[in-house]
Length: 84
Length: 393
Image: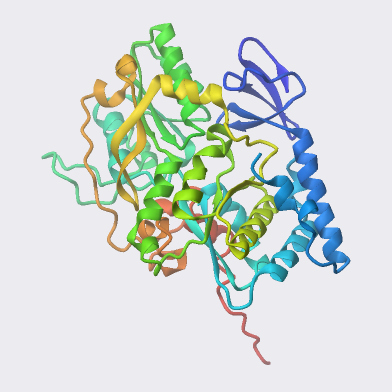
């Protein structure tokens, strides 16, 4: 995401660059990932959280492939992804 | 696209599916409602139903903004375009929503084929598809001698942009711009479903938990769902729109049911916080206030389920500006959209599905938007139900 004048920014949507309003996410900075709805960014995407969720999926798939039992509560995806 | 493709990995999806199959209890039925049309679409498009064990059933909810628009609202906006000469700006997916036939010369309800915005446009109405509410404002600036009405529909995701353009119009002193506000609220619709006879009497619509909306929750946060978990003892898991998100949310719901828990959990932590987008919420509260009642297609009149424009911005309220009075219009007798939106029926239960009613020529609203249960099933799933028969030579 790249800032233009005022609230406008140029957002790279999978290679297509589109002007999007940042009026609803004033905290957005250059390079951030934003979630766009009808031409407006409505929220920011937390890259660290995204990686954490993906890591949990991978971990679970590995366990499943190993034919392991259900994960203990401490590494349970539910516990880590629960409401914070 | 970054942070999208990763959440569509087929091997991981099968891994989560295997885990769900391991954890569901023998003989137990699990019925979960995905409230949001974005999830309905994802479930159909990625074949998620096929990945789930027999005991898990997904029920489509009413969270498709186009689907819940009643005929009476489309009639109002067609009336403004055809009868009052206004330029109507609208999101593209409302264009095909069926409306009433054109009134006869005596002003009485017409008898012919029902109109839609796209048919009204063919009759000469000035109706323009816009990508964003800001585009409607541009049309108003470019046409100072015409009335320009923005047909504002949608849940909490499209409401903040509408609030922004109303404030902008106010700041610029635009005199020819107004908004027909049909914005609706997710929590009131969920309450309405939980209070319905079908759910309360636990017969026709058993609901063991909800997949909470993705984008709506970015705006409102996860806190508004705590009430449903506590008061109605229903687990809620907020999920992103990608297939792995939906699979993971189903697994989390199965676990809550197995443990006898009813909590709000958040699978979509990469975008949803407990409090949501507070700046957007403040903006919405400054421009809109609750409507006492609003008609939803399928759900009927739901108290305090929608928004109207505050008196301070009354000059931008199309209902006030044009002296509109809402008149409800019943759906086509054969159309099952109402029952489908309440989770009572499935698209294939409808006689019109796939015969007279198709995405090209929809009879009911659920066949219009790609998020509608009927359109999603028609586009991705309708041949699955047809048994494969081997023909012996």
